[in-house]
Image (cartoon, rainbow, N blue to C red; front, top):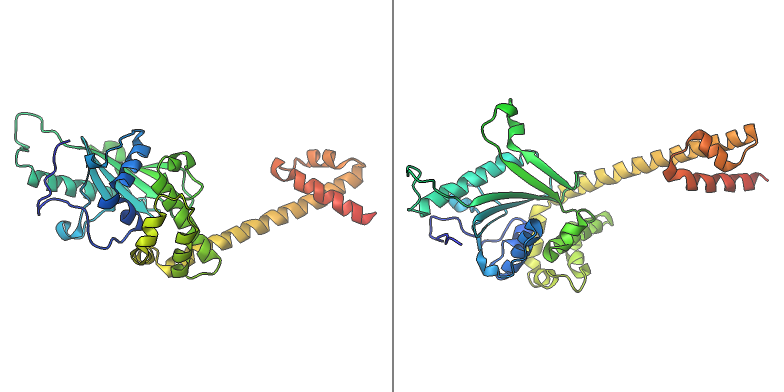
Length: 312
């Protein structure tokens, strides 16, 4: 691995209190193995020496308010990882800024690099990932392209692709199981949101969620040991009013859908009974004639039979 000089002019890991729980867990010199596990899960590798990984996360101190969640070099690749709790189709534009800032820093600390040389100058290959765990329903995996932001994308001479992975609890299970810390993080956020839905304050929900992580959780003891900072980071990242607004909207939408489902089932029950009485046929035949959706046929049949028993 080519050494990236950690001088005062180079990108370095942010040692201040981090404003993202994802960054707090994975941009972590104490547990480089967690970041390496994340890299292995994404790339299908099995590296087991954390020392080969070098953090180069962008700091706003150096890059004039440009900062990202996690960047690191591993051999010939520079990896840009970002976490998003709100869906943002402009991530390719943001990553363009991150990538350009990184290479600008790279040039400044590698004096041997000469863009005017007659020989091709080699750069670390960028790999760009966005981990999404917001409340908006998105596919398991999604590719966001910089060219989509152009008026004439087919005429563009540049491209940047962001690979978005949905890490909400219950999604991409096989992938999450390959990285224990990421799986724990996904479950932890799920537990916090569950606590808020049950009426807890966001602060109380964060405390309760840490304790509810299973004993074999990779990150549990680390979160407990750093509980005060974890709480501060999480409360900063997940603004309470914004989170509650999202959860209320989600609950309202779920309630509307449940109401529509019950209305549909109620109408179906009435139609089945009318068809049975009109043609003197059995419940299964009436359901077939009405072409009731397969997913609700058992419930409709049970409800019809119960109503007919009450009439007898």
